[in-house]
Length: 216
Image: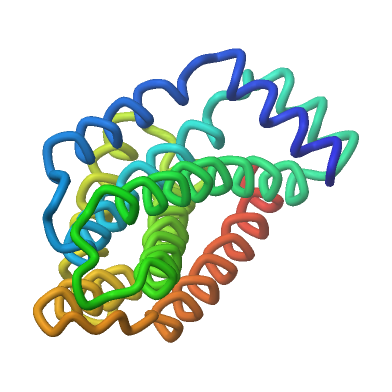
């Protein structure tokens, strides 16, 4: 699996397709987060903005490999393992970018009534919940479920929106916890939301890997 992850990461870096979602996230943060605003509210916005970026990243990794190369890798390692490596690669770097964003926002935002450690802890859990929920959306809106680029992109945008506003979504629960905490100056780490997002992402990954082994 380590070799597959290095292979997928190398493809992603060389293709420079990661640049578009990274610039989108930077634009979200630059417009939506201002120095001196309440830290928990700012962290909630930074976490929410990570969801569509994570979904986009996963979709990029699932579709970046040429068909011939994908067949060779699948023959060597198995289609399920190759697909899982692409999923993990697509989910890993948004989580890393989100971690950097949380630390930066915590440093510049107003932390009155909230310690830096508690704010950063809550922000990191919320960012992870949103990144994992986005990865779930990306896994279910790309191959092998949706092959047509137009339908896949439309489903990704709609799925990201629903994941942010639907009751019961781990991402919405995590962001709501931070926004509510901004009003009460109470940093309540969204452990339940993060755990739910992890289970959801694991289930979606298992389903996608099994489906790609049967359908491709």
